[in-house]
Image (cartoon, rainbow, N blue to C red; front, side, top):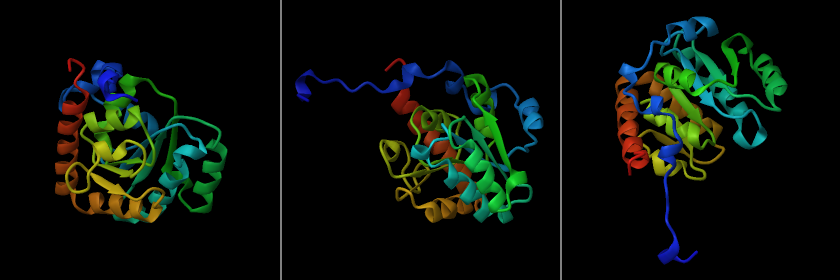
Length: 202
């Protein structure tokens, strides 16, 4: 593509206004958490279609690896797709079936409320959902694939691990769970980057 006739337009204008609100100014998520049997800061969050391309099984594998680090830790999968039954089976095989919550498809208002409540957001491969998680000030572990390294930089705005490195993703999640101050710092930093990258006015 010829640079002189090419424009790169970030998709901030495609995101709901609710995602640009400061996390502390968003509507309370108490009812959402109660409905799903979750507690604030005690769940891993993934927002993705449940299809092989998105590796939702890695979220369940990570939960199995790090669940012992925080009492009552669960995984919340928001989205739906062809892998759902297989994921239920995998959770059973790994002994975490009672700790995996399938929320199905949810609206943007729900996402804006629930993202700031997560202990860690796991992003094997996401697009708009990564932007929403970043704007929510969540600590994020992401695979180095597609555009994710533009948003996530290890030790600067989160933790980026090699593509499909499930053990690396588990180690990143464990670091956030073990170091709350680091997790908070990365959440604040990724929100600042997201605001700079995705400002709808720009």
